[in-house]
Length: 214
Ligand SMILES: [Zn+2]
Image 1 (cartoon, rainbow, N blue to C red):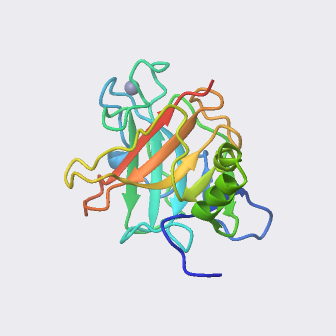
Image 2 (spheres, rainbow, N blue to C red; image 1 turned 45 degrees about the vertical axis):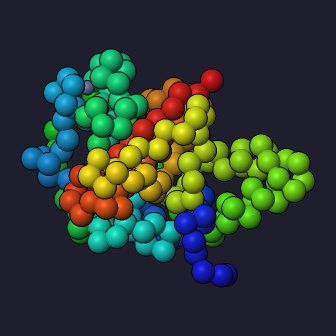
């Protein structure tokens, strides 16, 4: 395998027994104390946990060990949970990956817990260039409409990459989440995109945005 670049992504899929785990969807998150559990800035309710993803060869989180994703489901979408900076979703980063601590408030929804493994890397640039050469660029891009770590976002309705509030640069995609593995309560066939800010050293470096399926 050659050196990894920003064009490489790692497909996420349900893990088999004894396989190396890169994170999980759903269930109750580990290591999130009640006082840091995010509440929706719009409606004030505790958010629902979507996923925890661990730093590793497939996921560069800089100094952080784990990323935890929350979303507000308390008002059936009225909080505009698809907006990256509205406060109705939250990407938290953890300096340690604590697998034991269970804490936090009851929330309106708990997704089924599902352990995740990652496939070997795909060079998305190669894939798309090969598709272009074969006059099948759209098919190549559609192959990337999957759950994955890294690479580029496959947008459903145009580029929604959030700009870093502090650094005024585009944020970096760390994960893309579909509704295929766990039927997350974003619209079916919608896609969620998780970004982190390369210029911000605080725990608030993350942003989630999602686009609706058709
Ligand atoms: Zn809310």
